[in-house]
Image: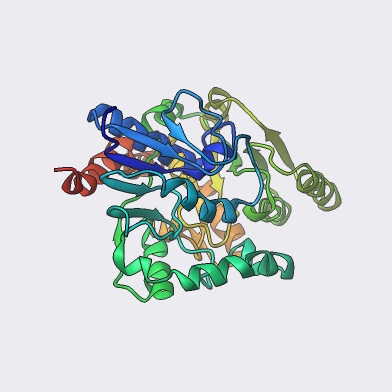
Length: 355
């Protein structure tokens, strides 16, 4: 049997049928390893949906719940492998450095003080309490492993939480080539698009309020993860009489058509580590508005908002001043996030451990 050179920690393979933003990172890591003829195994806690992969797992069925705890429990699967390198694309500190060199590709830690769903309510703070205790007990792994952050925003939070030097930043991969197909269309409408999974942590209610306050027509696109939350959003939209449509579970080609006609993208998630849809929109020629408290603000600081009133002002200015030059500026900025750049930078890091 051929030696396993890289074990890719990718717990989310058993939690979702499709590839989310994080899943797209997994996918590109798998592609990179195949392109370089590096033997690898995908490691998850629950059974993956993608059966084409060489994978190992502990739970013989799919488990779409308890995300944070699956990220910890994948340790018990991973320790069965003896690779030359662990590439942990799930971003959670688990003690693997005593088995093999451990690279962690991570966003801002859930236990950090940056705003997220885990800081917004008592329920989520209680949910995270055992997780916080466990992570505090294995904190030394951060000093043993090599950590790569997915944004400067994340790098600062990682350094603060784990008391280590600020890690290297490699931005996530984006399928710029695909979304650039929408760029050529110059005929744009004064509408905004939001792309986010329909789940509470994505704060889609902010997009509804933005539409209500600005009077700008909106479209929200994303996979439907939480039906109860989806119904709450519809009730809020009706109560505020906001001119906004919800289009769950659209094929990518349909998303592309919508982006090809829009001028504006609104990102609602405060505390987002990065936000791949921001770059997808930019590649399409759409101008994004992003929270200052997020990784997206380091990409377009001139279009970042402190609060919804601020976002409304910026949105109206963008629509008024939207031009082909602005569209091209956004597109050109998006090119640096092409997935091939991600692969090259990741390979530069991992190749040192595979000699």
